[in-house]
Image (tube, rainbow, N blue to C red):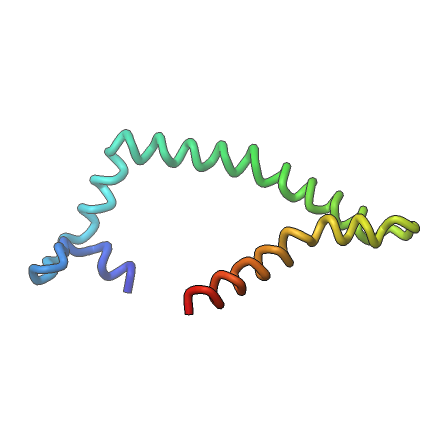
Length: 95
C-alpha cells in the first residue's frame, strides 16, 4: 500500500491523483534528501559496528564464570528491572 501511495499526489482531504514516478524524481533532486541519506550512511557505518562490538564484549563478560559475576549481572540488568518497577508504580498511582 505504501508503494501505491508513493505513486500518487495525495493530500489526505482530496482524492488521490496518480502521478507515477514524479515523486521519486523530485526526491532525488532534493539536496536535503541526499544530505540526509549521506548522514544516515555515515551513522550506520560508524555506529553499528561499535554497538555490535560492545554488545558482544558485554555478552562475553556476562557468560564468564567467576565469583563476582552475580554482582556484575545484577548491576548490568538493574536498569531494565528498575524501569519496569517505575512504570508499574506510576501506573498504579495514575489508574
